[in-house]
Image (cartoon, rainbow, N blue to C red):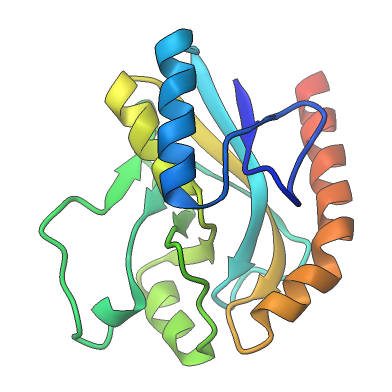
Length: 176
């Protein structure tokens, strides 16, 4: 099953499941209840904490849910906030999810120090639902912006080109 967020991020080969972690958790759960897929692939855009460049395409099977305040000592979490696909143990590229977009460039340094490279609002929910149902999952992301004060403007400016590149990448990969 190939899914995407929806709204301004839709593909002809992917089913939209919502924007943000709550919409995705609800809608993907409904889909899995109706017919459990063998694999879930999420495709979408992401912001970079600094090391990945605009229009880079990155694959990941590990998501985190870390809030910015964690790095400044303003919060902690008593729940497991990192999830990896069932059949993957590498944790190469971690993608962080929050319902908030990071606009403080300095915070990005804390994420990259923990090998968290990207920020996407939906991926953690995708991976948690997949984990709950015992389904392997992963994501393919295209970088649209850096997590800085220009995050939203750069996302809007780069989104259409990024979506074209991601569309071509996924379709080419599917032919292999």
